[in-house]
Length: 213
Image 1 (cartoon, one colour):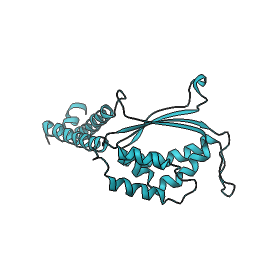
Image 2 (image 1 turned 120 degrees about the horizontal axis):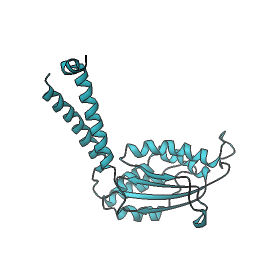
Image 3 (image 1 turned 180 degrees about the vertical axis):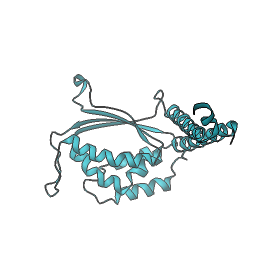
Image 4 (image 1 turned 90 degrees about the horizontal axis):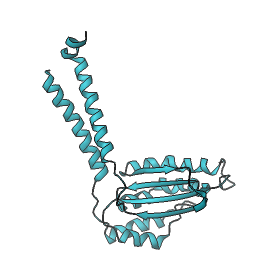
């Protein structure tokens, strides 16, 4: 295989990765219909886990009914308990932060399959403005993805760890003006894949041997 073909195949591989990731990241959801909002709300209300998601159901319904299909960001502020507040019947211990990490390990998986991810987190904040232990900003690809996550049984199960961890919690739902997206990182990843594929093919061909043996 000649040098030009190697370049072409490498670029094609990188381009395919780029397009696939961009589709995953920027997939444009159509706004939720009234029937879909009703279905999601019914699924959430039917969850029997205790404590479950602890949603403000009227506020959630209003939020979903105003869906425009665009990405949404949650800005979360947490103050953790010194000791996680699990029900006595459960054999679970640890600090509030330990319990939150258990919740996060489930949340990350649920978010990624829905084109969503954290974009910022910090365990330090100015105590003058509140006794917060952590701030986390999460990008959800759409309100549809957010409520689909809320409706998942895995989320309702994992919420046990969330509420065991939290002493105080505040959250804002916003749409971004200046928060950078992940497009640049996806492009860089595609370039890395292209370089790896090209280097691999180059090493296995006569060009690598002619130059470096």
